[in-house]
Image 1 (cartoon, rainbow, N blue to C red):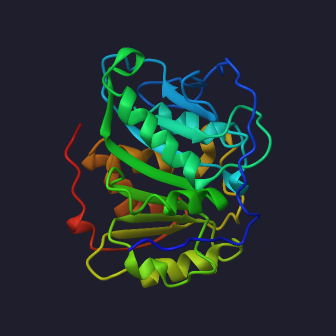
Image 2: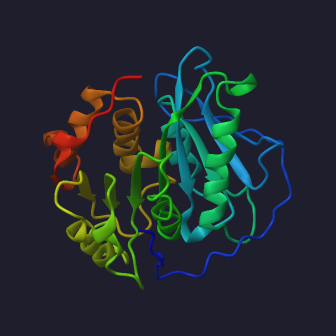
Image 3: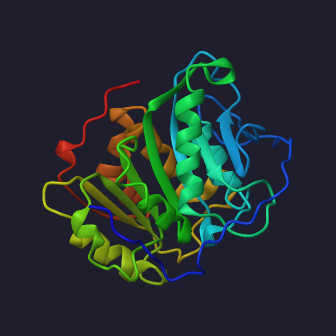
Length: 272
């Protein structure tokens, strides 16, 4: 059953931004680096992050909602370029240096678009059978709204959590991975509550790094969020079991993360 999802942030109102045809120099330290960003004129109001050296590699898809539901899709560019460099197509809501805000419907439009484009032309190597929705803060609520979409396999919540409908997490039937900024994170209590409320038997993971709500998105390659984020996308989208061990073993804890999880034995992703 669908639920109305809200967060302690400004209401997400989409403001159209002019189409740009620019591309970043690139970043990330993954095997398909650099991760670059550009736009496609057939998908207005979005920005595509993709690896520059993966023409013969299948690319699964990550949808991204920006912090504050900002329509500037480059606000977390170092982090998103890092994820792309590990073999993922990231479809971020908004445009480079765009103004205004985005909506959950805009993220859904990105899913609609890639389902049509995957396997054709410039997207011949995109695997749209593997889609994860994710986002930071208000953007995380845009991701939450995709949890009832059958095309989405799991959700990534970065420093976010439900506000008004605080019982909605009890209805979640898909895996959710929470990455929070510790007790000083303004969304900490919300994320903790959502994690605890999820039904037994549904895979879930929660990592807390004591850096606050702002995370490390704009550090080189996204900092420690970029490290765990790269391992996460390799696991949940590319089926890399070795990458999953970083999140579930001592490695993440050694890097400063406090980690809890449940029912991950039920979370299976075939290698791509």
